[in-house]
Length: 142
Image 1 (cartoon, rainbow, N blue to C red):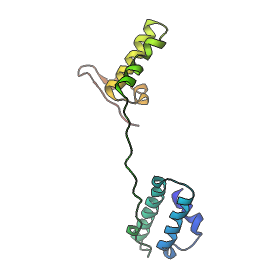
Image 2 (cartoon, helix red, strand yellow):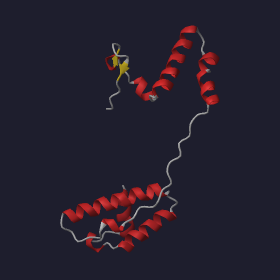
Image 3 (spheres, rainbow, N blue to C red):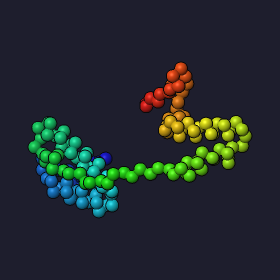
Image 4 (cartoon, rainbow, N blue to C red):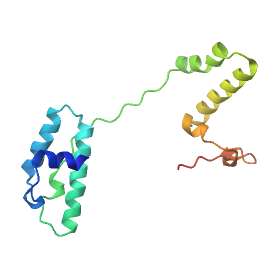
């Protein structure tokens, strides 16, 4: 996809004829399309990887090191406040229809909170992943 956009922009030309200005113009076009810096960087990374592949295969192309990535501010991490956590953990009390549902919902919330598991990881957890002798469990990505 990333390289297809470049080809669509500069046309079907010999790879050895691609100049840094072609790529700079392409980057400007992406900026004009209001793509964020991170997305534009994905394009540049793909182009650099392609150029490295070409160089390994003895093509005389633009040096990938000439293509710089834009500075992207670090991602902000937002944490729940203590009050938000208390409200979340109180939800089973407010919405459970019977004691069994309350116990189940409360156990799920505390388990997720205490372990840091994702909901998808919890739902894929199987008995074979739980080691009751050591009070541990393992999540294996597929």
